[in-house]
Amino acid sequence: MLATAIESFVAAGPITRFANQPINLIVTTWSADAPSADWTRHRDDWWRWTCDDLRAGRAVPANRHRAEACIGRLTLHFSANQGEYP
Image 1: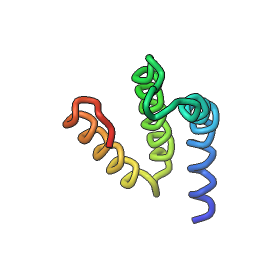
Image 2: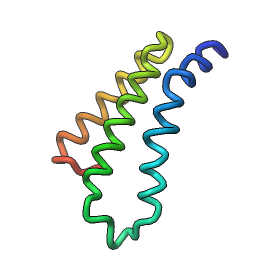
Image 3: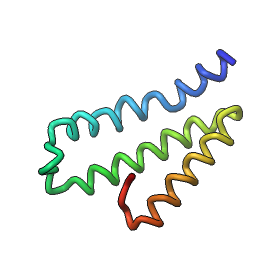
Image 4: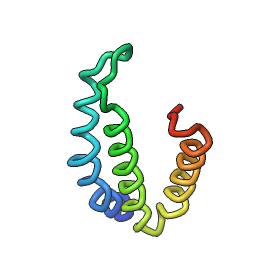
């Protein structure tokens, strides 16, 4: 189990650290009442990196089913709500 956790971290950790966290830092500077004019670009970039992060973790066999289910649920929600996140 520890080996699986290490493999997942090695596979997905860099995506989180170098792709998603910089976007999170930008978003934390926004006001909820007045987001950035290009907030949708940041949202889409964050979404793409999150899916890549899940796919990287999915490469580890023990995580495959969980990652596929999560990607499927998020994609269905995103499509059904015309791009609006919960």
